[in-house]
Length: 243
Image (cartoon, rainbow, N blue to C red; front, side, top):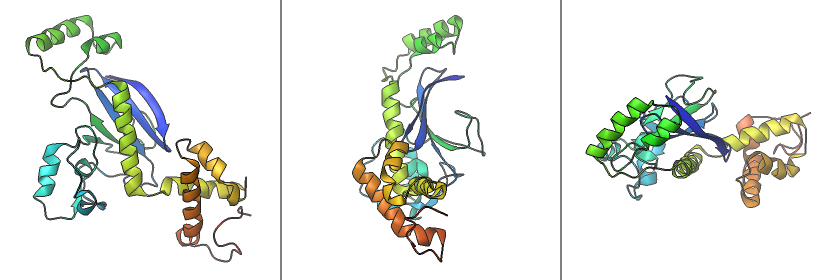
């Protein structure tokens, strides 16, 4: 049992913060079918995740076990749980399409939990959310009082920020595909000449700055013909609306 505390979007990616009945929080980020991470497990070695890209990074908040395994592996590719720097490392990925956890969607989810060493519990919040009953609360709290871990209870705001940090890292390895799909659909709609697409891009992805939106649009224009393999258009960059 769990309660969804936050269900929001950041830079076009949906993320969820969930409070679990055991008294801790988990964070989840969903990727769509256009993303190269879609359908992958957090324990799969992936070509887009290269050791060289993070070789000089600090351990950060990653889980130590996946990092130790990667250090003794000669493969140049990494698993997501070793690559992405997020609280405790990734500990969850969807196992099937249209998975209903943590929420029903067509996204593929990656998640992390805040129940590691030095993490705390908030059993009172679990009781208030109706995830446990009074009897369970008293029993579990008595155990916590007898064997205190003195861990830090990770707040909703903390987990939300970790979700955003994970999204930023996913964007870095996935490229601008999520923006390109939107721009392709905008072009097909014929709503605007693509020279005027920046306001539409910023409205759809409000976290983008004006400079970022302009850069993404420029890159979309430069790669349009190659990506879509369209020929015969007077404007090969795709600036004009589809007709």
